[in-house]
Length: 212
Image (cartoon, rainbow, N blue to C red; front, side, top):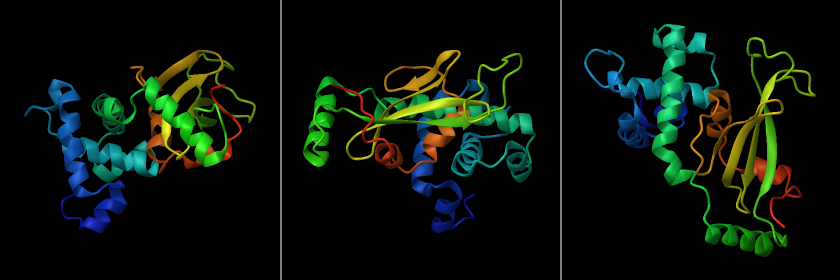
């Protein structure tokens, strides 16, 4: 991994080497203790590399496991655990639920920049394709004809995500961010991490607003 030059490192992981090292230092404390000692040969850096490659490209787990010469079940466990660790390490800093003052600032930005008063977010959703869980029947089947969970997100006037949830029509909220500590489906996390900003959400549904 360190054999990559700076440009190739960024292209491969969608992250510079210094930011990669910083993220390792942040997430390592949130990994299970058994993954930080000599009995486990896969270190935190390697686990993060596997996870970032998955999040950045959406590569299949079998192909990813072959690339890193690991078992598919091992890679699957690594991605799940590391996504949880990334969430625990960064949520409070990057996805904290807005305060009253921040909501007011967002509303003012919508009024000033878009002449859209009394608005605190532009919202939209995305159907994230999944394999139907066992014995779930039609619970996850959507109107587009495939099985999915629904990622809903709100963006501010500057196209930045400020809130989101992952839910299904049958079971309600599966997880969310913005101050609520709940598990979020890994596939939905990949959609968010793979986005550069909330621009698509905001531009797609500027007329769909939260507030009033």
